[in-house]
Length: 270
Image (tube, rainbow, N blue to C red; front, side, top):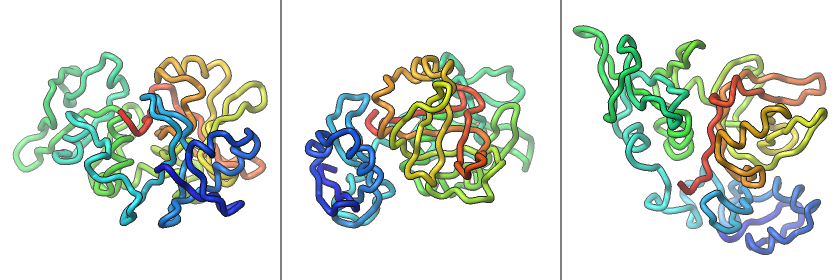
């Protein structure tokens, strides 16, 4: 979107005008933006990894004239599209996806996989379709597909447990007290990042009551290299993090990733 309204001052800003606000004003106002047409919470993206200039984004954004047409949504092809239209019954999370690991496979095959969609395991009436997927394709489908978010499919997180998709993934804006202490796939938008005590980096997902993701000082460089991004590019990106939700003594919700491979980023463009 080219325009968004700030609920603090009631002004409708173009993305270019908003990007030129003083840093202090921008930091506050970017947390209080809505779509000028339907009032959906909006996010300011100062630039994207693909090179797109400043713009606003609002998701979910149904039934609004300013929402991006379906043809412009980046659901992707190949494995991303396959997950939407041929999902299978059982997803095996491949934490090495895109890092030289196999795309597909099935239990008991020694990690051997192919380039197609689901595979089958089991005998007789107990056969089930198994797909191997990486975190980034999962994140893209969480963003674009309500059907996937509400899916009855099972997801196996290696060395952790097996979960039902609709129960495992939780949007940052939908968290509740029941999620504290639970290992889940938490996902949503990055509003900004800030340095904290001892040089840690907090990836913030909204207002003060929303969750922040902790990246230790010694892990920040590796985190950025792992995702091939610059620190300045994180604002406005989508984030998926697998970890346990915790609450500080001051009531702040936060998550520390189980490891770098338990995180995924998506800039909404590629």
